[in-house]
Every structure is written in structure tokens, then in C-alpha cells.
Length: 330
Image (tube, one colour):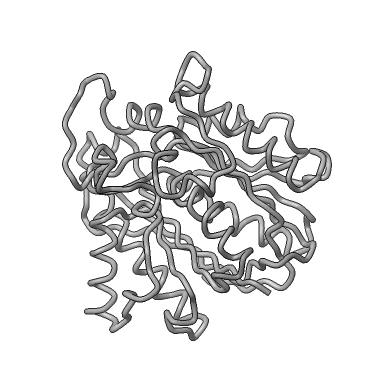
């Protein structure tokens, strides 16, 4: 399902990045970084909550709105019952919609917020997402204290928080259209190979988006997925070319690959993952380049693996989804 929007704009963004992300190539685009995974707290979960609060506080300062002027907050994370978002957004808005789209949550929130604004139900909506390497890894895979080795195909959960304000007030960056993803199953069940799990969902969403709007890839200055990593990126590019004759080599990249220097940061393996991974790239670097008009049309396709450890232990397949949103400079 693809929508187009008339009067939905991005006012500003705020990004808080962790120590691994700080050492990556996008450091200068982040609003704030921290060096210690505990972020001055006594648990990784509390550190993530603190990062959510800080990104919201910084966003409010940048856009000049009070909390009462924000109609709704939409957001999510990877903690059980999206605890980081729930605790982090408490008292920040009159209304709250908690979301879970795994690593696709940022674009899911942007789609819902854009629909609410486009339908004139709200004037301002904040989208916020977060993740934390240590809290996510111990929840979805193995506690890092075990020291279990990981294959090169594994991705590395990003640490930080990112927030964005959608508004009906005209700005230089417009939310032009979006495509809602559908759940995809390609018989994958390896939680250490998320690129292979999520690539089919990204392929399906990109193909449908282009078809629904009668576009070719060169309509966009940049198409980014998030977060397939090195191997998922290769799968997507090869499949799109071989099966649909869609060549993405000139204007496609993946947020999981962009977030880290994978030649130097070997611990990041195939690249980044987590809800904040694509948001740290799109809410910082991409937004910055669009404000400078170096990028004028961008398609962000956030991907997510919809699974729980329980289902993996029961040998169930890992489903995936990809949601897409098109941004344009006006």
C-alpha cells in the first residue's frame, strides 16, 4: 500500500550516538555522543532510557516547541514491551503510540505520523527510536559475557537514540510518499544472518514502491535500506538486477554499512542493526545533506526482523518487513 502526502514536513531531528557509532564515519553529523555504554547509569537498559530522554530534550530545544505543543509521540525500541521508549517518553506529550517494527520502527513511525498530519488530525508529531548493543544482544542472542563467537554474517546492534519532528508547517524537506511493507518469509531461521532474512522484504517494498508510483530508481538521488549489512546489501542488488532488471549500483546504499568503518571496526562484523541504526544515518547524515540540497530526493527503506528468541528456539522461521518513505527537498 502506497500513499502520497500533501502537507507533511520535517522540522528538525536530534541524534544521540554511542561509543562505537562515535568511532564511525558519520561522527560529525551526530548532535551528541557518549563514550561509556552505561552512559552514567547502573544498567544498559537505563542508559538507553537516558538516551531517549536526551534526544527528545535536544529536539525540543532545536524546534522551539514546548511539550504541550506536541500532539503525539510515536516510537519504539528492542527492549521487552518497548520499555526504553515508554520510560523515556513519559510526560513528553499528551498522547503516545508505542510501536514495534524491530529495525523498521523509525519509518513505521514516520508513516503513521505523516498519515495523522496529512489527515489533519494532528499538527505536530515526534517519532523517536532507540536501541542499545548490550541490552539487545543479551535479549535476542546470547549474553555478551558468554563470549560466544559470531559469524561474519552477523550484524551489530547500534547504540543511541534518534528523534524527529513531523509537522504541517512548511519547511524545506517534505514527506512525499510512503509504502507500507508486508510480512515476508523466505524460510530463514538464523538470527546471525539478518541480511539474508530481511533482504526479501526490502526487495518487495522497493519493487512495489516504484511500481505504484510509476518510477525508476534514478528518480531518487539516494535509496537506502536499513539494515541489511554487507551481505544483505549484495543479495538485494543482485536479485533486483537479475529478476527485475532494476540496477541500483549508482544510487543505493545500506545504513548498516554506512554507520561503521567496517574495515577498522572489525567487531561490527557485517554492519549495524537495531531501530536506531537507520535512524542515526537518516536523521543525521541524510537530513544534513538534504538541508544543504546535496540530496534532493531520497527513499529510506527501513527493514526489520520480526522474531523473538522463543520462536527461534522452537525452530520457527524468522519473518521480516520493510517500510519505505520518500523525502524531497522543495
